[in-house]
Structures are given as structure tokens and as C-alpha cells.
Length: 139
Image (cartoon, rainbow, N blue to C red; front, side, top):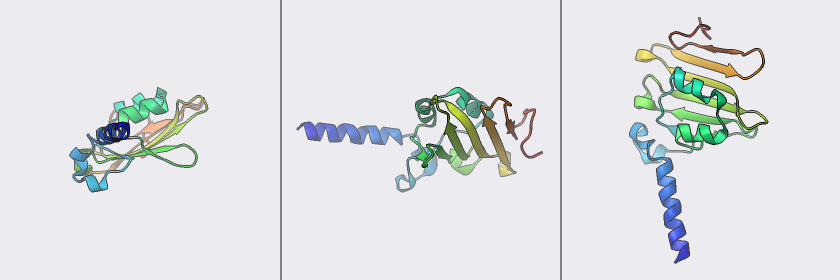
């Protein structure tokens, strides 16, 4: 009986982890640990700059795909691939907080790709192609 209850709980938690994803991906067959429906905006990406791994995963609504270095990659299909959709790679420092963000996002009317690059290094390296950014990545 305990095994059955534990199995049901795990299935429920797994379905909740991808609950928001189906709305923009269209089919449960394409859902993976890195696919999300979160809109990738300048404000959202900026908010990740002080986040922990758990904070990032919670904000994205999925675990992300982790490579051998511990970097997480997320792919958003927000509005079926329209503005706000894209890919985000997040690197973490020794303290567990975000140390670098590299995002490529679909712009308005799919006109061009918007980049968002940030690193926590002392020189504050970063740029953004989002409207209103003082430092463009692709001028």
C-alpha cells in the first residue's frame, strides 16, 4: 500500500512540474526537463542574477537540462515560439548563486534575436538587446 501511495505522489509531483509547459508546447510528447513556457523578458532575466539554483528552477517551473559543469539550460516556447521564447543558459558560482546568464530570445514580430549576457565578475560584464538597455550586445 505504501508503495502505491508513494507512486501516486511521485506521479502527481512530476505532472505538476510540467503543468505550465503543455500550454505552449502543445503535446506532452515533447516535454522534457528543460522545456518551459516562462516569458523571457529583460526584467525576468535580470531577476535571476542573484538567484540560487533552486530559485532559478522554481522561476522556470522545470529542472532544466544540466551539463557536466553544472550549467543549466532552459528552453521556452512562450506564445508558441513568439516574442519572449528562447533559450537561457545559467552558470553557478562556488557559493551556489548565479554567476553568468546567456540568453537568446525572440524579439517583437520575430524580427531579430535579442541577446542578454551577464556575468558576476568584478567588471560587471553584460549587455542586452532588449529595448531600453544602455549596452547593446548586437548594435
